Length: 242
Image 1 (spheres, helix red, strand yellow):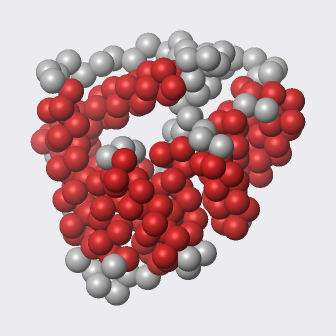
Image 2: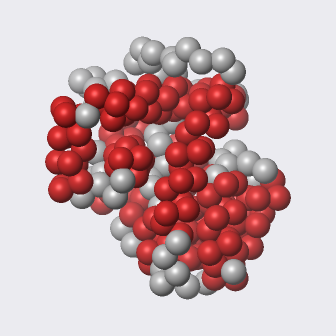
């Protein structure tokens, strides 16, 4: 794994223990690497802020809490520069990864799946975990997926917010219950949920895990046609499946 892949893997949460140790070593000994890492760290923070703002706009009619954490914005103009830089690094990793012609669907799934960021109910660490929504999303962020599933199911009964279905489906994918996840995502998309583009990406991955390749390709093509969420990743994955 080269240095750019190490950085990408860190932010995707896919590094092994040995790779994390290597990253820590490079941060201490390689000034250029440390500078690149800090830039990417700031970029990730800013992109997450942009994502939260986009989601808040989608849910304009809902009472979604705004984040209280103060996020420093990378001062770059225009945003396209930062986005393009991140895309170049991501594409570099994709090219290296997809040069392997022996990949199977499980490997493709593992290379593309990452839990969706909690952008609808940001958690202020240290706060009292009294309400059900905070407890549910805290469990989600802590990767306690069995607890998160239980709490999301309770939350859906109590509040019925459609986006809870989306997060519940992502949790089910983490628990390797892809048939159930696919069923929820299909219904969510059919009901025109606000996060349906994101749901299409995760549905494509669920189909991939279920070896329903044609269905996966169909969802990927719809993402590409909409020119929206994960379109570049969708193009690369579709190319690999062809």
